[in-house]
Length: 121
Image (cartoon, rainbow, N blue to C red; front, side, top):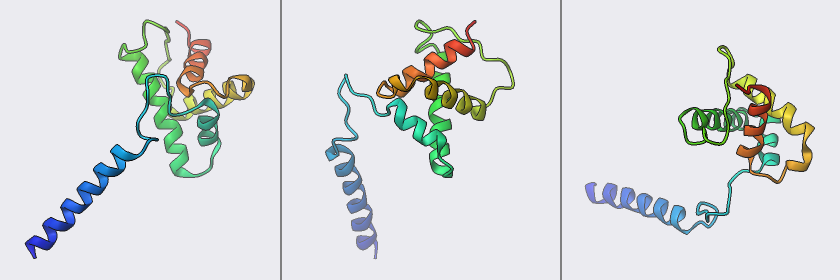
Protein backbone atom coordinates (compact mmCIF):
# COMPACT_ATOMS: atom_id res chain seq x y z
CA UNK A 1 0.00 0.00 0.00
CA UNK A 2 2.79 2.42 0.88
CA UNK A 3 4.61 1.59 -2.37
CA UNK A 4 1.44 2.37 -4.36
CA UNK A 5 0.97 5.66 -2.54
CA UNK A 6 4.62 6.63 -3.05
CA UNK A 7 4.42 5.74 -6.75
CA UNK A 8 1.24 7.79 -7.15
CA UNK A 9 2.72 10.85 -5.39
CA UNK A 10 6.03 10.63 -7.24
CA UNK A 11 4.22 10.27 -10.59
CA UNK A 12 2.09 13.33 -9.82
CA UNK A 13 5.14 15.35 -8.80
CA UNK A 14 7.06 14.31 -11.90
CA UNK A 15 4.10 15.16 -14.15
CA UNK A 16 3.74 18.60 -12.56
CA UNK A 17 7.44 19.35 -12.97
CA UNK A 18 7.37 18.12 -16.57
CA UNK A 19 4.35 20.27 -17.42
CA UNK A 20 5.77 23.40 -15.82
CA UNK A 21 9.24 22.96 -17.31
CA UNK A 22 8.14 21.67 -20.68
CA UNK A 23 5.30 24.04 -21.40
CA UNK A 24 6.52 27.02 -23.46
CA UNK A 25 3.64 29.20 -22.28
CA UNK A 26 4.97 29.02 -18.72
CA UNK A 27 8.46 30.14 -19.71
CA UNK A 28 8.93 33.80 -20.60
CA UNK A 29 11.82 35.52 -22.20
CA UNK A 30 12.89 38.94 -21.10
CA UNK A 31 10.82 40.62 -23.85
CA UNK A 32 7.64 38.69 -23.22
CA UNK A 33 4.65 39.56 -21.12
CA UNK A 34 1.85 37.27 -20.10
CA UNK A 35 -1.24 39.42 -20.32
CA UNK A 36 -2.12 42.02 -22.91
CA UNK A 37 -4.42 44.92 -22.05
CA UNK A 38 -7.09 43.42 -24.29
CA UNK A 39 -6.90 40.07 -22.48
CA UNK A 40 -7.18 41.77 -19.10
CA UNK A 41 -10.12 43.81 -20.32
CA UNK A 42 -11.83 40.58 -21.39
CA UNK A 43 -11.34 39.14 -17.90
CA UNK A 44 -12.55 42.35 -16.25
CA UNK A 45 -15.72 42.51 -18.36
CA UNK A 46 -16.58 38.87 -17.73
CA UNK A 47 -19.43 37.77 -15.48
CA UNK A 48 -17.59 34.57 -14.55
CA UNK A 49 -16.30 34.58 -10.96
CA UNK A 50 -12.94 33.05 -11.93
CA UNK A 51 -12.25 35.66 -14.61
CA UNK A 52 -13.41 38.45 -12.29
CA UNK A 53 -10.97 37.13 -9.70
CA UNK A 54 -8.15 37.08 -12.25
CA UNK A 55 -8.94 40.68 -13.16
CA UNK A 56 -9.13 42.05 -9.65
CA UNK A 57 -6.18 40.01 -8.41
CA UNK A 58 -4.00 41.24 -11.27
CA UNK A 59 -4.97 44.87 -10.67
CA UNK A 60 -4.34 44.69 -6.93
CA UNK A 61 -0.99 43.06 -7.64
CA UNK A 62 0.02 45.99 -9.81
CA UNK A 63 -0.98 48.48 -7.09
CA UNK A 64 0.95 46.48 -4.50
CA UNK A 65 3.96 46.41 -6.81
CA UNK A 66 3.86 50.19 -7.15
CA UNK A 67 3.44 50.82 -3.43
CA UNK A 68 6.12 48.31 -2.46
CA UNK A 69 8.65 50.26 -4.48
CA UNK A 70 9.15 47.97 -7.45
CA UNK A 71 7.62 50.51 -9.82
CA UNK A 72 7.66 53.62 -7.67
CA UNK A 73 10.51 55.13 -9.65
CA UNK A 74 8.28 55.11 -12.74
CA UNK A 75 4.96 56.30 -11.32
CA UNK A 76 3.71 58.15 -8.27
CA UNK A 77 0.14 57.40 -7.26
CA UNK A 78 -1.90 58.31 -4.20
CA UNK A 79 -4.99 56.14 -3.99
CA UNK A 80 -7.48 57.50 -1.47
CA UNK A 81 -8.69 55.34 1.41
CA UNK A 82 -11.79 53.34 0.66
CA UNK A 83 -10.87 52.43 -2.92
CA UNK A 84 -11.26 48.68 -3.35
CA UNK A 85 -10.51 46.14 -6.07
CA UNK A 86 -13.95 46.65 -7.67
CA UNK A 87 -13.16 50.37 -8.01
CA UNK A 88 -9.81 49.50 -9.62
CA UNK A 89 -11.62 47.18 -12.01
CA UNK A 90 -14.06 49.94 -13.01
CA UNK A 91 -11.16 52.35 -13.53
CA UNK A 92 -9.35 49.88 -15.78
CA UNK A 93 -12.45 49.09 -17.86
CA UNK A 94 -13.21 52.79 -18.36
CA UNK A 95 -9.63 53.72 -19.21
CA UNK A 96 -8.97 50.72 -21.47
CA UNK A 97 -12.13 51.21 -23.50
CA UNK A 98 -11.13 54.83 -24.09
CA UNK A 99 -7.75 53.74 -25.49
CA UNK A 100 -8.28 50.65 -27.67
CA UNK A 101 -5.14 51.53 -29.61
CA UNK A 102 -3.19 50.26 -26.59
CA UNK A 103 -4.88 46.84 -26.42
CA UNK A 104 -1.70 45.05 -27.49
CA UNK A 105 0.38 46.69 -24.75
CA UNK A 106 1.18 44.76 -21.60
CA UNK A 107 -1.74 45.00 -19.20
CA UNK A 108 0.32 46.41 -16.36
CA UNK A 109 1.39 49.39 -18.48
CA UNK A 110 -2.10 50.48 -19.44
CA UNK A 111 -3.37 50.01 -15.89
CA UNK A 112 -0.43 52.00 -14.50
CA UNK A 113 -1.32 54.80 -16.94
CA UNK A 114 -4.92 54.69 -15.67
CA UNK A 115 -3.76 54.90 -12.06
CA UNK A 116 -1.41 57.81 -12.79
CA UNK A 117 -4.21 59.63 -14.62
CA UNK A 118 -6.83 59.14 -11.91
CA UNK A 119 -4.76 59.09 -8.71
CA UNK A 120 -1.70 61.20 -9.42
CA UNK A 121 -0.12 62.61 -6.24
